[in-house]
Length: 134
Image (tube, rainbow, N blue to C red; front, side, top):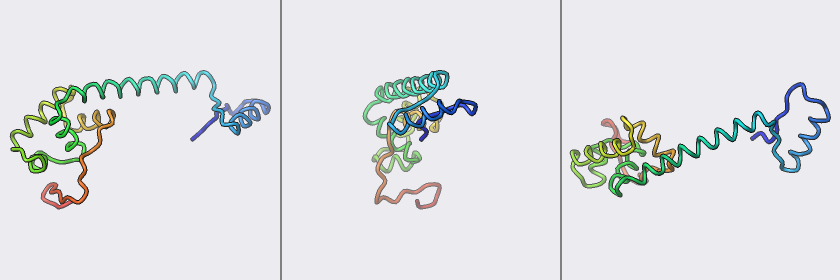
C-alpha cells in the first residue's frame, strides 16, 4: 500500500515534498525503482496474455475439465461430475496438459489461475477426495 518512497538519506525538503504529494493522491518513486516496477508489470501482463491465449486454444469440454482441475478434483470426481468415463477424463486431462505446454496438473492449474480461470462451483456438493468427504 505504499504510495511514496524516499531514501533514508534524503533531504528534509524532499521528504516533505513526497509527503505532500502522497496527500494529494500522487505516487512518488525514484526512476530506478519505477523502471523495475514497470518491468515487472509488463512481464506479468505478458505471462497473463500468453496464458489466456493457451487457455483459449482449449475446447469447451477441455476448459470444463481444467476448471475441475483448478477446483482440486481428481480424475474419478471429474468423471462423476461430467458424466464421463475416467478414461475419457484422462484423455481430456492429457490434452489439456499438452495444449498448455505443461507436464503436471499443478503447472496447468497455475497457468489457468494466471489466465483468470476459476474453479467449478462446488457449492452444495459432496466431493470425495482421497477417501474422505470434503
